[in-house]
Length: 270
Image 1: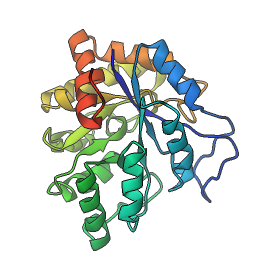
Image 2: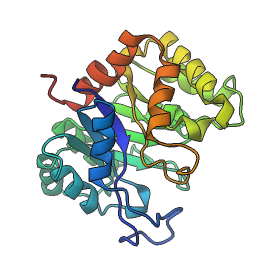
Image 3: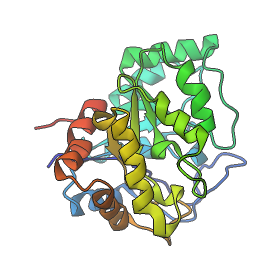
Image 4: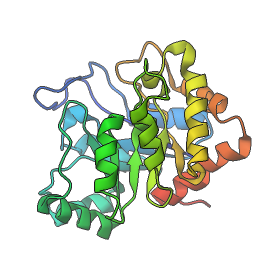
């Protein structure tokens, strides 16, 4: 089937890493290996996400997408003053959105002229904005972006703290803000959000909350391969199995892997 893994990274060791990166890898995550993982699970498509340690140098990821014969799309990192010409070039290279990884950074003021300009360009190209940040950031960003008429993708189920109960007021407020007319949520990275013995139960509980919020058609799945900083704790197979534990209904899994992802990313369904 033409199902989609919507979240993975490719990189090389000793690459052109940004200064003061919170993490840098010492191994390779190749496009060949990622495509092999897709093939082993019967998945056709994937989405590569720019890792934070490369900053706005998207070249390695875009080279990987170019080698995939149309199987992979990409989400880039850009500065707010990026040129329309470069965005158009990225569009021709299979790019479909930008990512804001805000861990270790302040909440951006998306109401500035620079941000308004960038969001307008993203809207023109039909791209989305992907947010990777803790819940209290989302409480500020989701209202600020509510009237921008652009798809917002929320990484890793909104990144609840692993040792906080899901009844935490900040996380509950985030869930209540979700709008199925604008927001998408990635069911991914559960090993970042829960203790090892609690991943499936925690994932099921968040999945139930999303369903109750009317988000069934806006949930997508990502493996988060190669599981940076957690490589010895998990793997592609474990995360694939975890999806089946969390989403026990086969039709719902098919919707998440297929229709939902096709709609957001524009993959060929034939």
